[in-house]
Amino acid sequence: MMMVVKIGGSILDQDIRPIAQDIKNLRERGERLVLVHGGAKKVTEIAERMGKEQRFVTSVSGFRSRYTDRETAEIYSMVIGGLLNKQIVAALLSEDVPSVGLSGIDGQLFKAERKEKIKIKEGEKIFIIDGDYTGKVVEVNEKLVSSLLEAGYVPVIGSVAIGEKGEFLNVDGDRAAASLAGAMKSDVLVFLTDVPGVIDKGNVLKRLSVEETEELMKRIEGGMRRKVFAALEALKAGVRKVVIASGLRPQPLTEALREEGCTVIEQ
Image 1 (cartoon, helix red, strand yellow):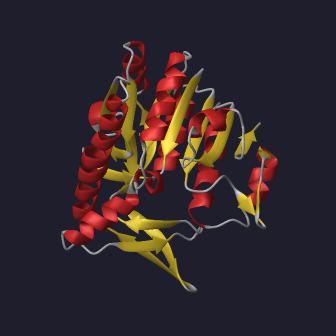
Image 2: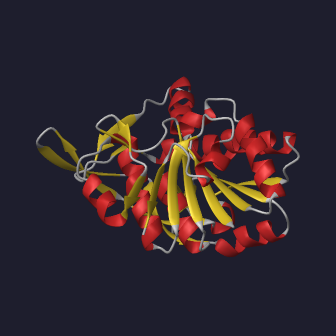
Image 3: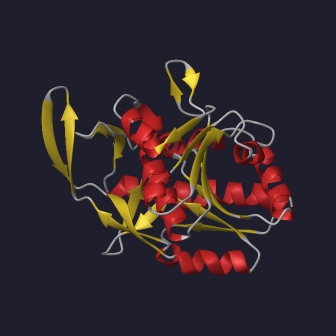
């Protein structure tokens, strides 16, 4: 089975050895895995330590994101493509899992279209701001990822991208993982986060259809709304199933594949 796993930044603040051990066990069963990770919290921490204040904005469609000027894009690439990426690789290597760390910039793994102007909402007012270095993934170099899998490695990909003019771009990690899963014809996409799944009215939703998920999008907010949106994109791109699960369990991926205590979204 082919699976893409997105590790959220909230998980990277924890001990990720259980994830590395679980990956080792899954590989011994013959599963093929690709990891995609974010790390926005660490980017904010390091940027502010460097004296670069971070600004967050809300789009007219209700998504909260970082306003990324050129300097912030460089810090973003440094932290996610460097420090966090290598920490994950080191954790895998400590469990004897052969792995290679890349960012979406390497080999044009994630090619993105830059949003030079973005429309944001503050209260009841709508503004257009420019100079932004965020983007949407429009092309995935799946051949590079496939070659690493065929050579026996677990690719670990930091969710930054390269633009058409060679610029570094901040892209949403959940949507980048969805694009990769679709391009790789993955059987399953797993989002590991710090909650057990999609929570609605105090309860974890066990199973959702596409239609139910589209309806749910109207009433959920925050980071989970973005994950659900990415899940829909993955399913429309041909991924069979998306699982949103806690990455804080002893065997987070094994339990997610068993559909234990998580949210499953499928056609």
